[in-house]
Image (cartoon, rainbow, N blue to C red; front, side, top):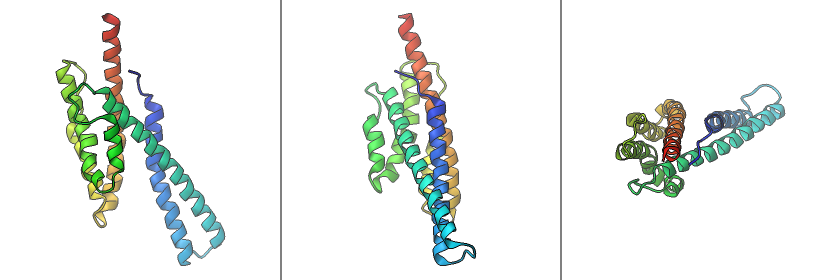
Length: 186
């Protein structure tokens, strides 16, 4: 098992989250220029808005790829016959419309629960994951659909997602260290 490069993964995940904000800013700029609310040069405003939207889209897609890779590697690290799902299902089922609202709970909160169970089953002294924090993310992701409050819960969901991504990387790297140490002493 290989360690996850925290700077690389977390950097791209945070860039992807920033990309979401850029994407919406670009879309808002296009909307404003189409509606004629902007008093300046509409062509220049539209070009900048399209560039911001495109950059945001590219960052978002790249961030999603790294999120999926991280989730896959995290679930792969705890496969011992007791995990509630496979790495492929953990990632793949997030792409099923509407079902993904439920699957977020399995993929993230379920990971924290199964990781803690894995540590207990293997009698490892590694720090446990805070299951409540991992439950918070899918709840906030559901709240994004609420009128007005959705914007605030969306920002909170992004912050919590960055935190749980960091904790997932640390957890997998801790398992890698423990497995490599055990293999060297055996």
